[in-house]
Image (cartoon, rainbow, N blue to C red; front, side, top):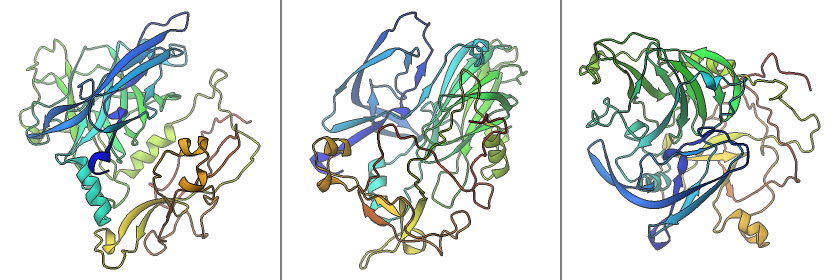
Length: 436
């Protein structure tokens, strides 16, 4: 990633939201066309100004508003000197407008995108992490729609404030584009109704706050039905959910819902932030809430949206996903835990990025040079997958570019075993899961 060959990538979730259903429905298929210009732009946050890679010069970037079933045509022009990759994660919020999804109750939609801000160049943070084997330096702030909020230095003016009207219901399209942290999110004194997670309808349920993982989307309904104080505002806040000892940012980003025409409204956030109460927001180590929230997420399992589970297994693969501690090589100083290096692995295999893309290698029949097809279908050694000591039972990972081949149309299912602690478990199947 150095020199003239440096390659930049844009995680579009950091800069734009893709919302289907935001436009009126149409009877025939429509092609929506967009122009994206990749360009540098100077942005100032936390009293630090630096160049950011942006789409159309916007930070956060543009919203793609389309209807389900539309064709989308996007023309991208790279206006910087380096090669650039656009990454399209599944940050899509779906709106069908049917009886299973109460979007007709919402007055309008409000996208809320969580991100992170580093005063330093993130590329330098990555280089140092790879050089020392330590975790990456924590970000300097979490952001809400690109704004850190007044709990951070020099950020009173960089605060997300959304005006709402008393008695109206709003649909919050929430996206966690933070790098690696699960986040809690809540609005003071307001109740949220979860109706969709990761573009899949859920049985609606009410909650005082939500837990949202990196790369995840959640849609909630919120009714502005509270009486504000003299500020006319209610705080909304997000903070990390602590699940490991890996380095993380333990700060909180806040914004405000401002009630329109509130008689006592000053129109400005509270001046004395020391007395600000982040009501409804769980503590960073609130495992009980996170577990309770996950247990409530259930599919619709309706005739229109059935929960179809494959009954025939063609290939059985056991995969363990790990954060490994690698012994430090001779004549090198490592800054990870106990003088070792952190590496991620699957079945004790840490992926090495090939010089050309795997898809290109496949079609050009370059498989023998760029990757191999011997990814292990089970861990190299059996151990207690649910209660093993991550330090005493740690294995040095192996490195390579290994794949596992499946046949066309092969369905994939995962069997996940729970650990002993509340943060080491997956939510169980819903009690009302229909039989196959």
